[in-house]
Image (tube, rainbow, N blue to C red; front, side, top):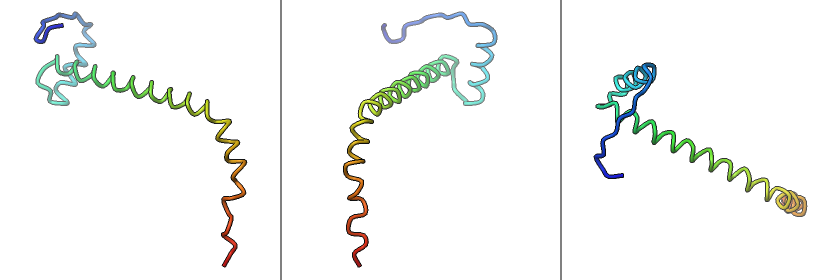
Length: 84
């Protein structure tokens, strides 16, 4: 899409009212900028959700080996602490 491409979207009255309210509250110069910021926030939010899911899956995959390592080396955690 070329820069400065004009487009038109028809929105329900409630959506327009919300955009105008946000425009005033956030002192944003145009309705288009309100929509742009909202889209960026939505994109960032969806990225965070996807990243959180990938971390959850990775943690699940290594859980068993991590538990084994903890079990194998737990006795070393207090080694040498009683020596004074």
